[in-house]
Image (cartoon, rainbow, N blue to C red; front, side, top):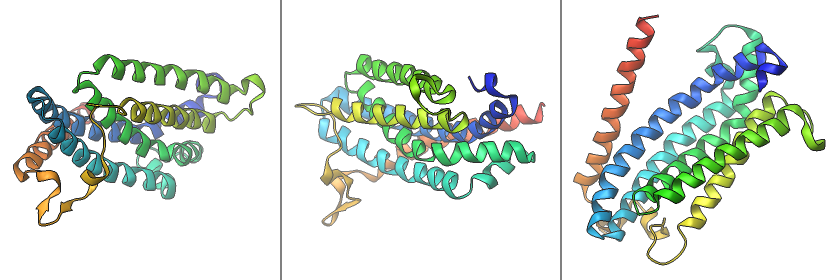
Length: 233
């Protein structure tokens, strides 16, 4: 949609999107680790164990996402200079990153929720939430970028704000879906790293290591693939 306004706007957002791409790779690594272990416990009918794993991976994901959020808010120009030296693209990309910054945190939370929904017998609902979020994002993009229905014409900022709005709706919907009896949810007591003299809820060190190993192996694979792609350019 931004290509209709100007090529510079499209290029700036495309380059800024590389930050989102890297964040997405890390989230995918976390969801892989979460899926592999959560599915095992769900198959055994051990919901408390699934909730412990869910809480653990979500905490790690929030830390990772906060780093991206703060970097986009405080250092957008530095991030853009990694990909280009063009001042016009840096300025446009920096604006986009500042507005979209909070979406990194929201996306991290929503992706863990969607992952746990898929692995707890609610895969159809997870797909519905994801698809609806995409449709909402596209619609709000058009409204805010072009200033439709009396809304201000925001262009680059509008594209970023549309993403943030869609993510807010996605997170709220995910949280509502986990409410109810016999549904996996984030419980306050599971958020503690330690509980008394033992790890939270009996979380086993071996299990946490398996999550990290699965996640890290995926990250290393993607890193090597990116390096190969770059060397081939």
